[in-house]
Image (cartoon, rainbow, N blue to C red; front, side, top):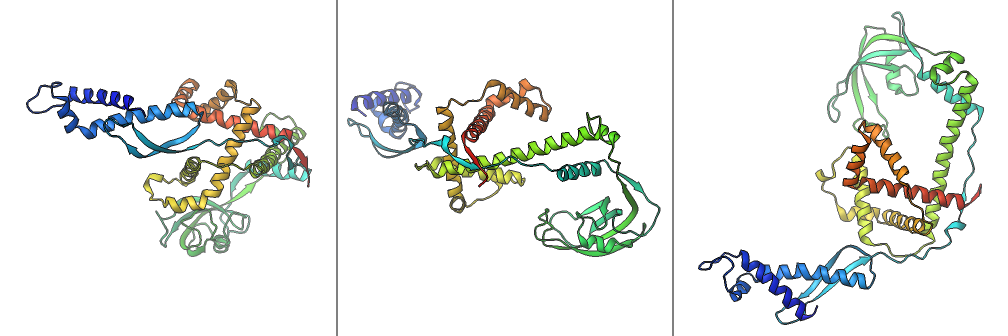
Length: 404
């Protein structure tokens, strides 16, 4: 930067320091400039650099049309009286992306089928959801019975012990561990027993997975599951259906919609993979780092862990996730570029509809939720997510579909 600009900014910095400096023997603002420059050299230097460097960089970025990513790394700063200010700035920029033919992609896809058997299975699930449990007279437990138990763990498990004063287990049921069924068979209401239960390695609760736990169980009662008949009355009880045939048709459409959504999502994932593979450009490390941090934060949040309480090995974390995060960033950049070219953007109604859905879910007024989302940046993220979904739908619509 020219020495004239440096001198002018230095003069302004000296004047500011002079106004607030408190030196023995001088009234505020009256200390000689020579003393101010000597006593507060570090403070003056800091003010000059903080004022001039960002200004100069901003002008250069605009002049060269540079889209800068993150904060520049400033080194080799040379600031001496009567000389130009010199420094080196190192920074990443958004790369130029030359789009290939993204409309000519081929993807494996076919509309799903829904058979009568699929409909029967779903209706049977609905039937079980409407079942009633009837108390039986005291008798030994057998397969198919629902045992009412009080259950308490006796051996040590991670966290508080397992204790439930009243729970229900189906003896011999598919969701009941065989160790429980084996020891409950033949027990009568009022009986108490201690036994061991071995949990599989992939059990849903980590504190029990792969462990053998000793329990004390007391049978309190025996219940039988009564299923409703599948008739028009059953259909009417489930919703706005008059007959079983109407219920079956609604179930068929629901299953088709769900499977079609899943199949299209899989096809869109294939399209994104192809899109990434056919484009070669450098991905800014700043974006990759941010993506890894976001992915790690979401994963920990799903497990109920606060990232701030952990000492993460960032180097190892980055090594493990570098490739996947780089592809995700590249995909995001490509989809944004396609959206820009095809003028794909979320409408206000689309954004408001999603905000309204969240407001209903949180039982808060729409206006209050929207205002909060505007302030914390959530509204922008919602708009970005909608734009991405619309861009993926655009790619899917223009892709060739094949069963092979």
